[in-house]
Amino acid sequence: MAATVLRLVSFIFWAYRLLIIVRALLPWFGVGYRHPVMAFLIRVTEPVLGPLRRAFPPAGGIDYTPLVALFLLWAIERLVTAMALALL
Image (cartoon, rainbow, N blue to C red; front, side, top):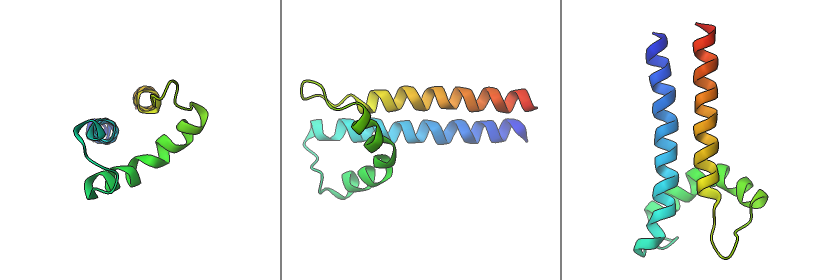
């Protein structure tokens, strides 16, 4: 049971990181912000990326917040996993 919960948590973090990566890459392929897929990705990822963007504004015209978000999500996942394993 515990292993299943840990796998579910890991999958959720993986899926959210994937959404952030796709959101960062789609504009490179000409997908505009009004495209339905992009609008969905913005709606889902902006709660994390928005506050990070205010804390880490784009430097030299490049938005580094997806990289910061990926690192933070990875660190939080590791912390949650370690805490869950310690409780078992």
